[in-house]
Length: 266
Ligand SMILES: C[S@@+](CC[C@H](N)C(=O)[O-])C[C@H]1O[C@@H](n2cnc3c(N)ncnc32)[C@H](O)[C@@H]1O
Image (cartoon, rainbow, N blue to C red; front, side):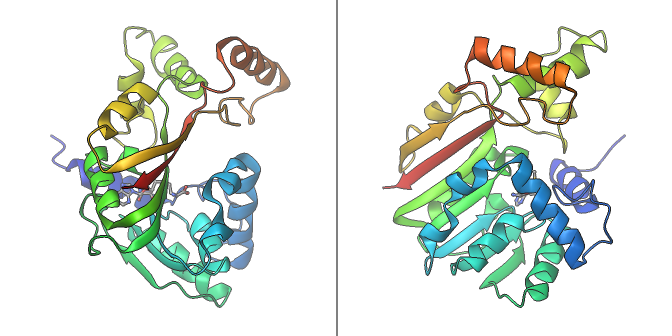
């Protein structure tokens, strides 16, 4: 019997390798290694720049929840933000601290902590940013409550969570359910059991909007544009063309794996 708790499983998974470091060939924690992590990340996910707007928050208090290898986190610091970072794993904090030291940069605070229990007081941050994190947490909306709690009134929250009705989720279903002879498995089930750490969730736009209805936030923007993951950037031309056709049929602006959300705290 596996007695590991949900949180321990998530922590164990991300402690093995922070997001985006698993395919890097260079010696770990060297400048070359971090340069490769950064090159790869923004080649594959260039939309992060227009979403995060790093330089918009210069001199502002920014908390990043779930820093991973620290690639976005270092952009906050480089941009002159008063940057606080946290992650469930020691590996993420280690990657990020070494990276800061290599560039002689300083974060205001960098801690191992759980998004469902953020160890900062209420209403202190101008921006709370979290890319691809809270859908890995056992209780995604407890984490969102915490994020809202620590954001100042009038402050901004930027989140990326996975979009269930996306091309990428559909490909995962083809591989994990259809090809394995289990076509009755739902998208939800495939993502929960087969996508990155145990217990990953992906939401629909409707579900998310319903969940935030009674929270003290205003929805500024919600964007589900198709990403390079949906367009199978790592596959041959044949598959990439097929993905283009699917995006054209089902909608470039709603079938993206990344649901990018901007909220304003009331
Ligand atoms: C897919 S990675 C994303 C990391 C980073 N934001 C990025 O885009 O590269 C997910 C990260 O969320 C962290 N994480 C998962 N659950 C968490 C929680 N409850 N509290 C804080 N961090 C969590 C993991 O440790 C991991 O570093």
